Length: 170
Image 1 (cartoon, rainbow, N blue to C red):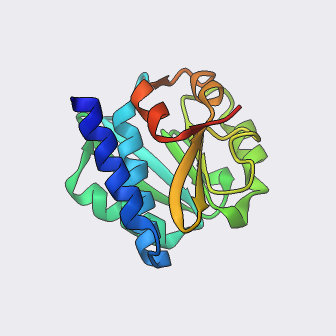
Image 2 (cartoon, rainbow, N blue to C red):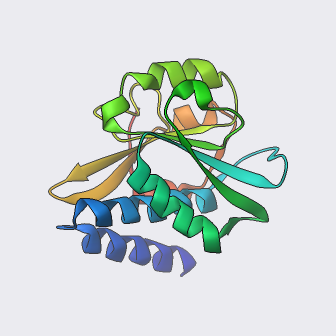
Image 3 (cartoon, one colour):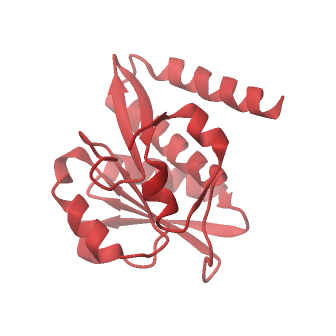
């Protein structure tokens, strides 16, 4: 029943997204990204802070900061960092790379090494090129692809419920 309720909530959210403006899309991506934290487990979060680094996307970052004002991740304070370069990524749990920075994905994978970092992108073949989750827009609707191997290789524990909501790719 809980799974059905969860799936229904996501379906309503995805239906509502269709036809939305860029600003609304940023808001929905922020909500979806925050919800990833409920269905993926990170080992060893230090300093009681859960950090999401957003590369060069102020609108998404601002929406995530609004969420961080009222939400936590487990018992950890949610911190949103604006970064202009992958070189600024350190000690975060999620890093977001937008379409216009697609060349930074390989650099991010190299810099984060085997750290427990979920890489979220929004680009063609994001998951095939190393991201754990990649936002896609199909007929005006926001959805996401998931590469289970890219996530589990970083020692993150992925809930099967999240796999039901996205499109699994290899």
